[in-house]
Length: 425
Ligand SMILES: *Cc1c(COP(=O)(O)O)cnc(C)c1O
Image (cartoon, rainbow, N blue to C red; front, side):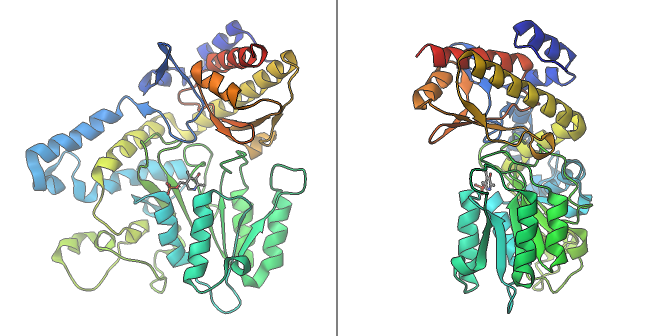
């Protein structure tokens, strides 16, 4: 399709967009009395209007039933998480028994590393990507310390080549080969938070397992954003947060995946708690831990139902929309944004550099752009004029045109505001 940088053309695309009406299901902050153009759904998704009712329901049940709500609430609290199994497993391409929701992301990755990072003898190294999300870096360092290794010996980062912004698949595979029988674990962010690069999860998982390592994924920027087939790709484990693309609210509960092949492995160490114990006998208060079959067996505590409620609202919305139609729009609107950036770049004689891969198979709902020659004042201008984006020093903006609630007209408007912000200085 040949794009045009006009309002009329953008509106035409909106009128053909089958997801366009979902915008009305979200609450947008306002700037100058106008709803904002929201590009930071990769950081904190907008609030769906339906969410409040899910929370109110728990509040009402609590008021009216108090402790009895565990069993007699409209959605009983004691197994509230089971409502996620069907819809969430579809979003990440898993069997219902392979997913659960609990805790928060970094906590879950730590807990999963207890099971899947078992350094022994020669095999103790972890492969991750260079400049991984800081929380992941701290996690790796503390985990290897915990097992008595030095980070500089045990953590192997896959580097970008000089002058390149993204990591090449061939370099990941070569590093896995090279570390070989010293490799205990590969754990990478499925979508890089900074560049938006999408990794080939299937190929990397197979390569890591071929040399005898476990392979897990941090899917913070992938869940609700890219097509995942975690079961078929034979991923050992994964976790993601729910407040980015999944719109469940600040700091909210995390989702976990543990592949079916590990469900019967009694030798796998794990940190246990009563919510992972056999559901039928949980309240018998038995002394011996008998894990729930499946990912649910990794649960520890009583559920934070007030935080699961907004996540459930979101998961049900995703089930309704379906990942396939989300992805179709995602690719189209991202390409339109890329086109707008090129057009504006020409008009302002700028020097924009999109550092996200241009190959649609290696990117999803994010474009990270170097605005060479521009400074923080441009970011301030954008924010003041209703464009909510994210600025990373020295001058990278990350733009996530989230398909559920961003419109093509938003992309057009953004271009005009960007142009004004650069030319009007
Ligand atoms: C957002 C993000 C996190 C956040 O972890 P929390 O434990 O939820 O604070 C972790 N890893 C990656 C890659 C992220 O993008």
